[in-house]
Length: 601
Image (cartoon, rainbow, N blue to C red):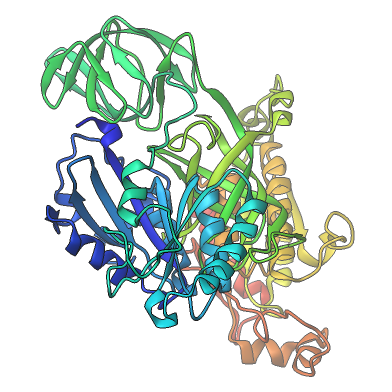
């Protein structure tokens, strides 16, 4: 059997529609059943674990519940991997796990309960994750005496929705998972139905292929064996031959394949799905995340994209916040810059949105810190899919598909000044720093920053203060205090502080900056060697007692919304460079903690 003889199938639908029962019946009625776990299968490398939700598979290995049960069975015609996905709405992310690794979806509907919102959601996600063949199993027909009209009513609703999605092949079958009607053999109870059984529909389904056969291999790692450097990876598309001219992307260096190994055995050719090692005619700087492609058919390279994104975390997505981006072997830092719209999965209407919540599916713009080699998802599911990982919790929070690159990124180039940052720092005889003071409103950040600024100025240092209130009078006057506006507030200040540090200044930033992820982003933008996080540690009660602006009192009365410490959270730093306690101390005394640290460093 070849790779086209393997079909990956997922069962989906609303909770209690009978997915597991139907799957159990299918396995029971096929004679040659193997109930081994997926990880133990030997399918000659064709199971591609690096597809879109490889990160979720890793979570499962770490003991985090994913709740997708995989089964494997074989008929005389082909082999199957079946993913039994949960129907509960809170486990929609798990359904996406199955969809990302499937060629065909078996969508169940309980004929008595009818089509439900989760039915539409699962069909929509299946389509977005590249599944174009859907078998609609209208289940539990025995409970309605196999009435044709009840079957047709459910089919009509799903078919109308599928037509709106477009580019879907829908095959509807009346079945009974418990009785076995039309699962593997035709049922005498449905003489009005002349379509295929479930098994017949699976046997005739055609596994999808990528839109082209150009050679692509994401590099997993490189290793020197004796005097030969080997580069390891799994071929995502096309074929690789000894003697082929290649291009290494995104850096666009070229070379030629001189040797090739498959499973430790030297060969002359490898095809899609094979895990291989290759040697080149010259040693190149190639590392994990690079892509080897056919020299005459390279991939696109970009760092900004329009994407479809499924948000899978209970914590909302905030545009501008930094996440880890993973696509195959590639890892980058990423931000969702704008949400163009989110999709109503029942009406398929496009809704305006500033944030995304659990299970939202949206069209967004995504930017990376470095360019990557890619292909649109519609052309290559491996190179066009990705996940987003929370930088603090390391949880997978989103999965998406690249639709196309935003070409505006190619027209913008960084202008390098003749005088670099080091030269400016030398001229000022100081080491540039960004002293980032964070803490509750009323903690004393601005007063402490003033004391540090006054002392440094007296010492002949070149300094500047960026104060939260002052900046909101100008640069950030368009921003409010919602979570998404706070993220953008800190992003802008981090970029300004970076430019000031490049100019050689010591910058004192006095911002509440309540979210840990946003302060981590500021550190990344500015550079860890120049960023100094100062936690101005003042108990909430003490900050409220000071309350010289009367803000806490207004927040307690409900006159101010999203006030940090009252109805909006403050995430204290976990490992700041400096902790300043203010209770029982003057601003000048608290400032000495920062000045002493600067003197030592």
